Image: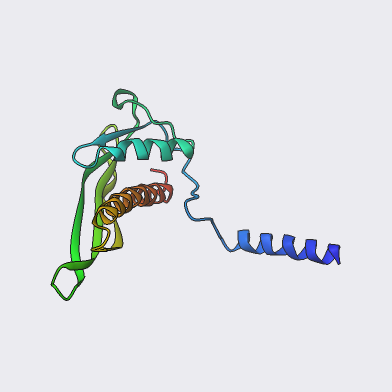
Amino acid sequence: MKILSRSLVIFLLILMTACGYHLRGFFDMPAWLNDVGIVLEKGHRDLPNLLQQQLEAYKVNVVPLSEARYILIIKNDQYRQEIMSVSSTTTPRQYQVFYSVHFVLQEAKGKMLIPAGIVEITRQITINSDRILGSDEEETLIKKEMREDAVLQIINRLSKLEPN
């Protein structure tokens, strides 16, 4: 019985890896993508730090611009909201929040590798009129999570690059 269950577990592991299954957030970064400098032209001040942490977690060396072979430029980021539903007193009850980050990746010499990358994240926020302060804190937390998700999407995009 133990042999059968062990064999089944091994078979399932082999099957999952053979079909290309990856856990969310785990990427294989190209070996040639190293010595990356990060520039924030316009956007949330947390983005460069979040990007640096994620790149370094994937063994990509993040360096000052003067030493960079590749430059990841955050052109801008933007939040926008749309009202999804209103209460009987016409106060907004539910929003849909959109977050987009525009970025480019280029060689230090100027050749564009990703000329106009955009990642977009969408979330819904429900406003509880009994807990306005809690709703504000929830919105702040959701926006932070959206920035983290955007960084993971940028890392995913970088992991798919072909060598130049």
